[in-house]
Image 1 (cartoon, one colour):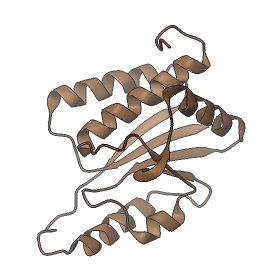
Image 2 (image 1 turned 180 degrees about the vertical axis):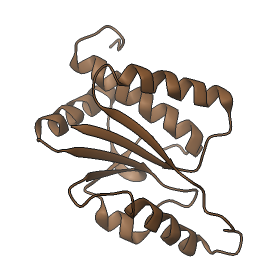
Image 3 (image 1 turned 90 degrees about the horizontal axis):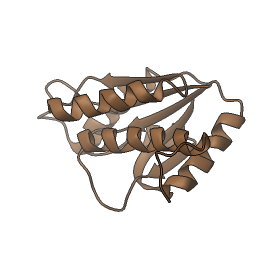
Image 4 (image 1 turned 60 degrees about the vertical axis):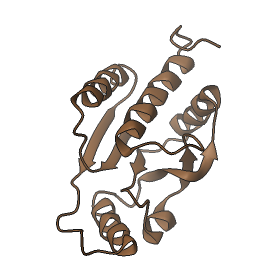
Length: 157
């Protein structure tokens, strides 16, 4: 299974970029992983929240195949403990899916079209994090899930 992580907009903070890059490198020892940043919308100052979500949704949809299993990282999603998420990942790995795609939307979330396209929604927390922080938190949790599944000592219960 290939895993792709799609996020809207670049990260400007070099420290966060470095930490994300470190976990991306670590993840590649466990599974095929790719992170893709969808460029921010240009000239979005005159767009309403709904128009911005719809435009971002079109950018995201253009990067998805019909066979992709799409998971939204969304505040309305299902919450997991780290061990629970590793169990969920194990089920996905055993399901025989070709591509598992995790999405982070823009500052206003996802369009209705993206919600309809997704097969799952996962919440990282009831708290709100910046889009840049969510990248690091999610990729670290994905790495942690891999180490849990391999019974490696990274995760301490």
